[in-house]
Length: 416
Picture (tube, rainbow, N blue to C red):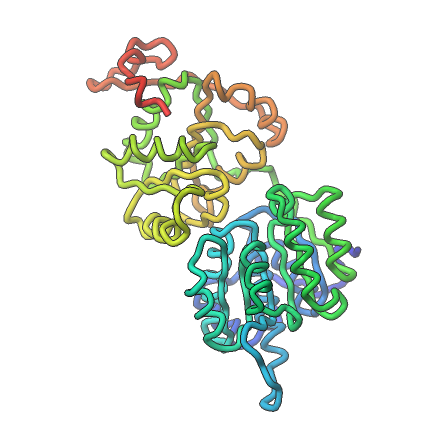
């Protein structure tokens, strides 16, 4: 495996890259000018048809990196008039661990192929089979984006054939491992051309021996590009930690959400039942929607769109549902419960402070959350400043939440 080679030409803007007119036009329409570090380091390799591994966090521009690679590879090899094409034979395959991430990649793909004659389709679990079948059979397929389980379903139904795949992308490989998708991916890879006969790209936020083993097995002499985050968490995000009891959390959350500076907020909880309870408690006073595994896929897409469009200002979500949320103007992320996995904390708070904006992350630390704090501090390499939550009474006289008699006013049924 090669580290990225400094002898390659140095690119700083999209205009410096050897891109087709169709892609340059799409990039310009999106307002992209400067390359992000991962784009500048990986694209010289991948545009030269080399395999590559990228270590980068979400929000670094990696999606555009692999989509541009795919689009350029396909545009460089157009089908001749004499070549026969069949339905259900994608030329490029992108695998993502969650429906939301797959949908986000698909949305980005549609923007980038606006001026190119390429047909892209997204298939994920939880969505209507008939609608997906209609999309797959509409016209010859260029770019297929999906989750592993649903891709396998279509292959087994004999409606999807992967033997013509020219570019294969595996996104969030570490998450794929965590979610137990590797056996499915192995089956998918067996249906594709050998790694010497396709271009393969793998992206992962973290690398361990398991991820590296997959990379060596599925990629052919890849370039390796590592974009080390300056810190595990974005410096544009102010992180606050409040000590309170479980019973005080709902009152504290209501108080925070009613503040003027909270324009668009995501509230995270660890379990689906907690998310539902938060939603039921807050909906009377806030424009709110929720995302969890219990919400049907089509509804989830609609709910997320309402949040993106600003029709609702509060979104409550679980970690799995929250992974694919890319909304640039989220002002606050509130951890109603601290996550069990330190990496989920980084992903949660990364939903704010995006695209040059600043953001605020607020974490509630109760008797049930405290045991997660040491692992989190080690993971993000910082010591948290834990403060008591100050409750403000209706007459605006502040009271210390840790000592306040106002605590007794909190309805026990309201605590989630």
